[in-house]
Length: 356
Ligand code: NAI
Ligand code: MG
Image (cartoon, rainbow, N blue to C red):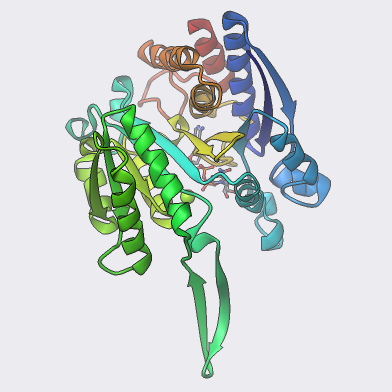
């Protein structure tokens, strides 16, 4: 198989971990006889420095011409003061919109050997295997108007939660398709007791469910879901929700089992290319020190093999290698217990490669 992969390392530890994912993909390519061709593009702070904007045209072009995209992370204190329209994070929002990446997938799985690095008790998280599906291109984060105003002499503000039904339908459908391949349960999260948009969301979920009679659909109010996520996360298989609820709940779900440095994500569009990135940021506090955990990025590359290229065996192989490295006791500083020997970023990458 021959595939073009756009690599956007970004800023801070993004660069360090992206290098790891590329090395692992190269090793997989050699072993399974695939030709992965990597092309590099700029996004985020360094793009602002060099091109004056966080997402230069040539990066958009490169992404559109590629079969899949790997992204490290963007941002850092150096760019915190710049004009909000050209902040590094603007590049992220823009690429999601440019590529119409409407469904963000974040799996949270339990790694037995890391149970101690979770904030929750082992009996609560043992066996957790959930997949959050967050709508990514609509809702409050994009709705217009979004502005300050004058309301009869008082200072006021408005943000708009806008969705077309078709935008709800496509992401809910995606959740059902994914659930169908898993434990066949979808939990749709909304605030239907208050919001009209949530009532339409709920109706849409019911309509989609008719096409998947063997997938069980349940509805849950978002405030209850936030509580259930930490008290009984094992009940969830696939969880689907709109943009802002998903932003909040996916962060909550993602740390159930441990470190930010372990968690991958995928963002899907209707016709590709898809984008894969770790959920963590550019971690300026540890950037350049060769201590960042590269596993979230490597697991994102595994998701790429599966979701973009249909290479299930290869994806499983990478995930198995990661699990074996953890079982063998290798730990970057974020997942090391007190007194445990710490593995560097580059050593961790080499260990995963050796396990393939
Ligand atoms: P962060 O995720 O960069 O870091 C939070 C904490 O977790 C830090 O203490 C960091 O050292 C640690 N951490 C994160 N990833 C790690 C890894 N792989 N290995 C070991 N430790 C890790 O979030 P923070 O500090 O809120 O944001 C830093 C910058 O990153 C900001 O400019 C922010 O806007 C940006 N950011 C970018 C994102 C992206 O590119 N998708 C997502 C989140 C934040
Ligand atoms: Mg967020």
